[in-house]
Length: 133
Image (cartoon, rainbow, N blue to C red; front, side, top):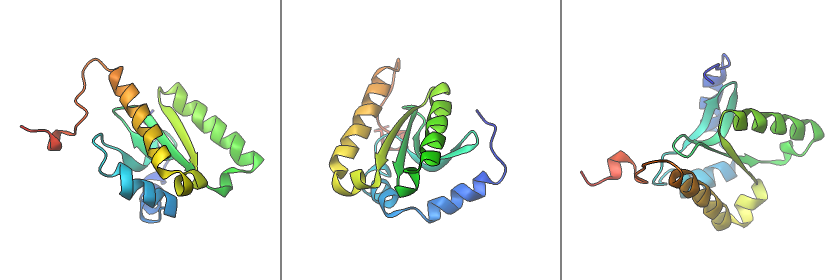
């Protein structure tokens, strides 16, 4: 899965600097301080996903109006199938979901992470830097 597309690293960095309002809201108000590490605008294969949690094998996508066209729907489907084949679960929210049902979106993400981690043999839900050592 490490077949990175040339130039995507710079593109991902630019996307991190220019997140949408909804991406900023989810990142700064939930995922950035979530007990399990999430990455934003992460390159996976030749794609860049909005948010990625390695430990839970989870991708979170926030879809704006550009995702409503027939072409975009087909592309998102192909992309999701690629991620699923690489053992990653994908959750998609619309911008309106983030704007109008933020707590519910956070709950869905939290439940997916908890289920994924519960199925791992051993896991400490807290980051190493947060654990009492």
